[in-house]
Amino acid sequence: MKEFDLIRRYFSEQSVNRKDVVKGIGDDCAILQLSEQHQLAVTTDTLVAGVHFPVDTCARAIGHKAIAVSLSDLAAMGAEPTWLSLAITLPSIDEAWVKDFCSGVFELCEYFNVQLIGGDTTQGPLSVTVTAQGYTPVNKHLSRDGAHAGDWLYVTGDVGDAALALQVVQGKVNVEEVYKETLQRKLDFPQPRVLVGQVLREYASAAIDISDGLAADLAHICIASNVGVNLILDNLPLSVVMRDSLSLDNAYKLALNGGDDYELLFTVCDDNKVAMETAIANTGVTITCIGQLNSSHKITTLLNGEHTYVDLQGFEHFS
Ligand code: ADP
Ligand code: MG
Image 1: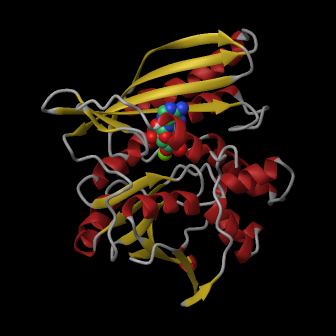
Image 2: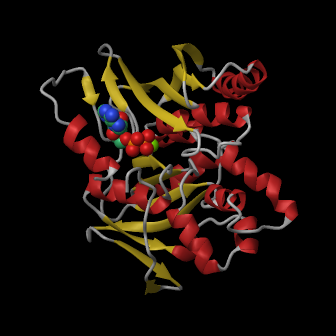
Image 3: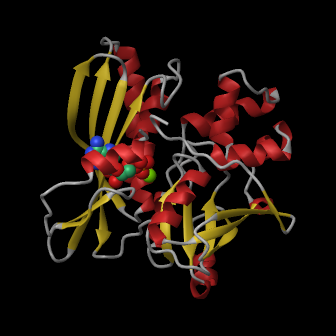
């Protein structure tokens, strides 16, 4: 059984159905109604050593990534991050390690003005669970299910670098020495697109963060919104490292199927396209239009204007 089937079958079905749960299980965050004026976005993510990061990853990177992953889910809902809870399981107490871990955590907290408000510390194999919360203006959050046929599909930043970095760590691919540090940083220190998410509240019809891979997360938007998409491979934003290190074919495959980029994938109706592009330009984050939605219920890939076949997969636990 796959991760999402398990969640659907055992955790999504419940007899309790509170009115203050605006959005429950099934998106990047839950949305809770606190009062008439306030809604809260909430997300929880776990990173396990050897699964979500190589066991020899430096402590500061693990701290950074644990927070970045959750902030990225808040970004995908257009939320303004406010509070974090941190549950950490450690094999033993190594103070130098914990100090470095905390520097990674608090760097991001300070940058986004997010406060650590609690958590839990236990002994066992290394794993980190973060619950992040943030505000959204009432019923203005982004979600996966608002896209329509005709909307344009965009992605922030470059895609595939984190997956390429992992392949380098695993010794599967080699890249030129000059690229190694920048590439490793993409895997270890992803930058959650928090500001972009908040700007997109005004313009986007749907959004998701790319944690499982562009193709898999695009499929989540398509299924939730009941649409299909023409994906223009020529437009995929590939970094110089990707282009210099891989054949174009392999670069596309990695950009579509590799996880851990934490970029935002979002859709915009034609009427909002220009205003959105102008607003996002002010954030300093690059965005690229990579396709258009349709009513086909399929992901079709185009290269040089022609249909092309790419094996689309995504990272799923238990698959
Ligand atoms: P993301 O990749 O955005 O972090 P996930 O794929 O981990 O999201 O989870 C998909 C949805 O299922 C989310 O709404 C999440 O809150 C929910 N979910 C995952 N595991 C559980 C669980 N054990 N109990 C309840 N809800 C869960
Ligand atoms: Mg997510």
